[in-house]
Length: 424
Length: 177
Image (cartoon, rainbow over all chains, first blue to last red):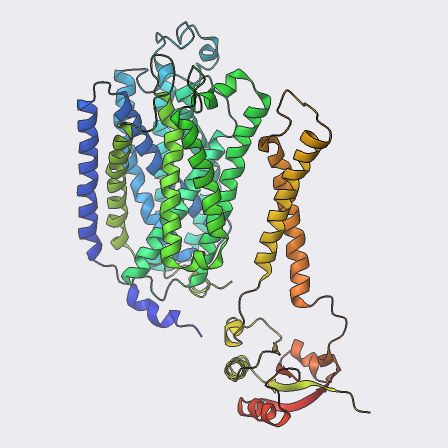
């Protein structure tokens, strides 16, 4: 009945072909970063390209955080079906240190030109409606949290924790390949128990500092959860793309069966509903309470100051239908979940809409002289794309560089047998 | 008077035997038949030629019904039957109807799934002819059975017996309805 065991060993040897793909990816990445840099240099108002770069950094960091959380959840619940996919997540975690390197320009910019990206960093900045940030009571009350020193230190702490926890789970898993000791599994379970609360806190505060604080007047208790939902959805979709790629290349042929795709598809469906639940809750509570301190955030994304509808209103609808209804109904189907080219298409679709969702949360912070959000369709979209390609190229390079350094699957994991014969 | 014939039952000793026998019965084109095993045999559904259950479709129908029920209930009560402004909000908005519709989606999906599962499985079933077979309790312990029903269009006492024997079935017995 099981043909897995017969074909698996042939796919265990690490391959060298990844190396040339890795180099290509790095070249593409550097090209993307270079074009973004040119964009910043040439743009008369450098604000747009810089914000687009922030979109790119948070996008890939979100996917990496999602992968880290999936590894930790895998260990804490002692999952068996995801053992072979977990190895790919572990490789992806190699991207964290490079993501930190790519975040440094934003930190440097924050110190060189405070208030350029995050307006509250410049106390003298005039705010819409009169007065300065420093004289604003809403800033003063939050100043213990929102200040340049805290921002810098916290960002460094976030990346330090992510790099450290990644190092812990990677080392334990990779060492187990060599000595086969089950203690590494137990060690990783303890790492997960420490890493999960740390991960939850860091990703929440990262979302608050990097994205939400662009409008520091705003309140939303759902924000961290919204970011988490996108992190996990991005990670699951990236995993599907990696799984289909490795299967098509032959590496995972005989290792993955249709039930692995069914299971990860079910998680994609579950987190589609989860994302919709938290995103709707955030909108609904603000809509229902109708307090100006909260509604302004959505007003910026729906109306201009003269009451006319702006482009972000349509972007919001694209997110409503594209981020929930389309993937929800598509993922209900069993056949769609197990057919490689269809589930991959759904994964690419969701990854695209996650990017639009991040644009929706970040780019309306760019405003014109009336305080209206600058339109979605603008040259900034080009810089979003170049940033995503640039940072993505570096992340994929980090993954592909890590890929051949270990066995393709954790052959000595105690649950590997269960994983290879995963069934409904 | 002899009771009418329900079908034939054959005994198998182990998983590979019943698995391959199921493939033979499937390939012979029978539709009204079943396997009785003391443990879940992975892949047996495929060997028997069973399609995926239609229960998910019943669930989806239940979910859509629940969602529409929530939306129309709130729309009709608040904006048609007894117009009432609450909290300065419009008479009807999908916004505030959503939480209720969402809950009803889940509730109706759950009902549809449970009821659909009962109907598809033919439950509740208080009697089944195989219970008359004196060896049937071994099907919960260490023995595997294949039952082919007489109502199957391909059923023919002699030929079906021969098929079961050829598939490796032992102790082939006729079952009373």
